[in-house]
Amino acid sequence: MSSKTPSSGLTLQGKVSIVSGSSRGIGASLALELARRGAKVTIVYTSPKSEALAKDLVAKIASLENGSQSITVQADLSKVDAGEKIVAATLGAFGNQIDILVNNAGVMFDKSIHDSTAEDYAAIFDVNVRGPLLLVKAVVPHLKAPGRIINISSVGARCGFERMALYSASKAALEGMTRGLAAELGGDGTTVNAVEPGPTESDMLDDVPKEIVELQLKTTPVQHRHGTGNDIAQVVAFLASEESRWISGQTISASGGYLML
Image (tube, rainbow, N blue to C red; front, side, top):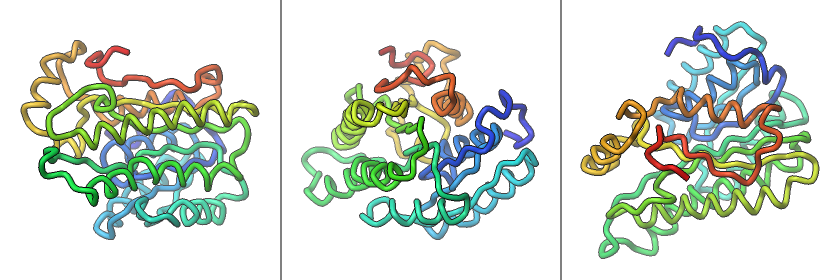
């Protein structure tokens, strides 16, 4: 989608945001939509191979010419110091406050219980659960009230799929964390919510077993299609806005009706 696509106005003008896992796929769409609405965005990527994609996204955001800005940070969310590194770079670029955090970085897992190991458990939970937790911890001292925290979960948190027990468990844990943080951080108006995409066009979709994707499409009421990054971005941008102020501790299924909560 072109960076010139009209947005819903500059509803996030001057806000400072962090989007993890945002060099490609859903994360890139999230970062671009926040920028379309005027936000400054820290684009976080993990692999050096993603650096070029992250820089391309910075160029797209610059081309908006609406006051938004962006920087890139390479950080591995499986490392305990990643959150502090991301926050330090954000504050250095945009000043002493952060308004919006989107925890999008995550890893897929497709292995039977017979083949799963303790090392597999650590690898997926370090990124999908501990990573968001420590990034929130690093952000909170700088979060300007009322802040917005949005965690990207998956329909896998509520549905059972073969060979994906560890992935589902990690995303269910992220939703439990969302509710706990919403209770803990809401006193100043900060909201914490989760968004559950269904099958969505992205590199990660290629890692989902074909039979699962086909079944999901057949049972997705809205147009029987994959979601797009922009479909998810519109939901996240709303949750990042003032208009969502009375929604917290919720999980929103952004899946075309595949999963109806």
